[in-house]
Length: 214
Image (cartoon, rainbow, N blue to C red; front, side):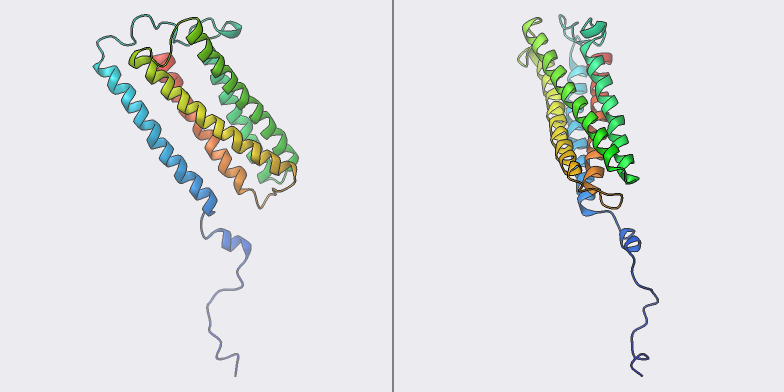
């Protein structure tokens, strides 16, 4: 009789897979919402840039021809081209890291994260070198008119976001070296993976806007 009075739900025991399908992990959702807010932030910066460009009588200002991807730079390339190649390559290594842990390969993930970290630090180092050459050799600083302000604000904020990504990758790598991730549990890797792709895409738009289209 007691069994007849038990409620009938029509569902069997809940499995981990069924629970996972209920929705996105809150940490991952939080990262995506943060990225959405940062997209609006950079959209505002691009809006200011194009508004100033549309109202300026001459753009880019005379005497700023050195801000171009066609410069001599390092290894016969403009520095901007070199750092773009490096950052795009780091996006591939970050994708490799995520695909490895999705298959349960923690060692492969750690190797890919290490490569991504090295590429990210190299990107920042070369960006600082470009700033140094612009200020010391071309006398082009943040106070060099509206063009200088826009250049350093847009690239500088992006550099700050890259630094944040580097810190995130370093933390994830440290956890990975301690064996904290698995095929089933790697939300932090996924979150950093989305963020790193975000900074990569933003840089591509910056490169095209500032160095190519000008």
